[in-house]
Image 1 (cartoon, rainbow, N blue to C red):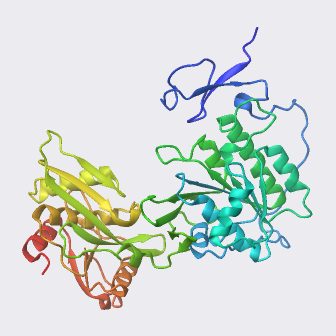
Image 2 (cartoon, helix red, strand yellow):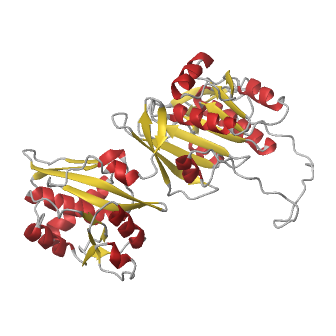
Length: 462
């Protein structure tokens, strides 16, 4: 008798004919779950149609005249519109991930109320809370009077049937969250790979057919990745991550995939008791509690998309009594820190091998661009020597393995933002500076970390 079940990895979606303690694909432990394969294809996918002649589809010219390009749904939240590229595109699917309690539901409820007050039809469907709980949040946010259609349901068939029977398709549908939905065509439990994939596929198909923008909330794993199979991230048009530390009031909205805009923009929000408030000038917020007289602190002039952002980088270098000194990083790449330490040791004769090194990006921001190399090096040198960095100065520049400091892009925007916030000095790589940028303050150019080390150790805060 043929076996009527398969085992699907809940981490990567790989399928196995027998159970094992470790997934052979992603090497995660205890992630294989038994599922029935009688419901269509592998892992509960759609049934295969019988072979035969298919219907003829209509082909259109790319530049055909008379075809209207739908306008975006501008949410009115400037930071959200910046990240999405100008608002939600009708017919698109957006996946929003973030840690529990970070503010995903708050952000989407504020978005729903703003669009509804502008005359758009918005449906908010929750599978994690009762409608009374959503109303309590809406009362706290001051959006109780917004004409948002609300329901608590987890059956995706009932949800789609309800949406199709409305007088006209809604402009925006919010699903909170995809892990709670289930389809009665599958025997798997809600949250499994098969259910998440099948429900996502049906929702996205509805969005494309009805020209409705759909926003789907997804849970995240302990590693900070959106839970479920990666195929869901490939299916949607936009993937947004809502980042931040619950201990900080700052929240960062970042796009990691966007078919309709850039993926290097960020939106900054401040969490308050009355909800999320946009932060149009995040540099001022990140530097509001900075102490410039302390050693090991440096201001980095970075870029997030088209927006210059100034942020404080903090380093602590302390003697270690361990055989292997500690290396702890928050908000930056730990491998890049190891590289900077090796360069300082090899080319600048600075010994970190007997010291613990801690690095932190203030405010909960995560920096990914290599332009932060010189700022990190300056913070490490300052902490090791206990000499504060020059006051009212910003640092930026990429460091190579030879110790050379390379130029970076958007130097003019970095300098203008620094001048606007009162920083008079800029330590940057040697490069051609435009005449307008020279007015941004006292610019000091260096081409090697040895020059930076000599400057910090001899001049210090002076």
